[in-house]
Image 1 (cartoon, helix red, strand yellow):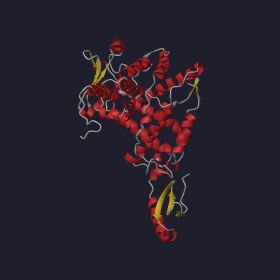
Image 2 (tube, one colour):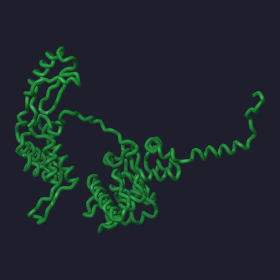
Image 3 (cartoon, helix red, strand yellow):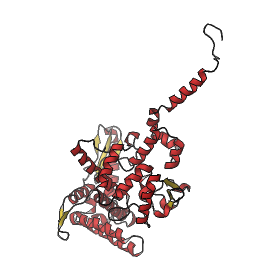
Image 4 (spheres, helix red, strand yellow):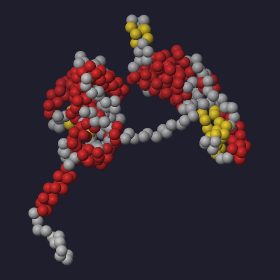
Length: 401
């Protein structure tokens, strides 16, 4: 149950009066206790009266609100605004939640209920129809949580069935919603040894589609979405590259599509035959597929990469090798490409053309690699050796200049 307020309370450490309403602590006044006591009581009474205004749907059960959302999904399928597969996916997430928490009133529902429910769904459950035990993985659990957030947000913002989503109740501490940029140290470049470990596990799969994808990521430096969405229709035989058109539909895949510039992902010569083999296999749609023949999505790619990494680390334990580091992701292949290029002291302008980025961006995120190179000092010494052969124009010791 949500905590009910017992009246305003003064905290010396925070120099102010506070009150708790529905699990949310709010500040009433700031200042000395006795001088602000009456003001705090007045504000408390006003806040309490305002919060008595409650949407009728808040007293309803979660079952009623979520079923209303499913009915809306069915109507959206009829009008063509939602795919039938998406509706079924939402239903598969909501039905199990209703079985466990459907009888809880919306005003009493908290994110902790969702956390406990997901923990139960991660445990093996016997399915009589399948004759085996099944459980949810990380990708399925994350997807189900997002479906619930979307359903309650719809009920609060679009349908007006409830006053606010249970996911908006953060408790005492309000977290900063501003997205914090990851520090440079977290931009891990995958090592060659780690790449070989992952390739070894991907090679063991019956179908080598993920193995091929890792090869192309390592050898091209392309962003993962640019690569796993590549289509046979985007192939340019003259350039030996996939050319992504700068259209609004590709903005989620190609960051600079809004500038009106096409993105060209060049393929090394020895990988061109493999690219053509994949294009012949999948002439329509993306050429990189899952083992079931479906195109990759962000969540399925992350889940597969995570499982491959776990398998590689288990094999490393048996052989006494180092683990693949925790922060390594599919995007680490792009960082590795940039790292190798800079360490070999190749032209930065060519790298920017290949990866569709700017020199300012590379220097900002990889400045530590430029500091490790000796190219600047080598240039200095080369120029200095030429200057040493010229007649000296500096004043001689002991002579007036």
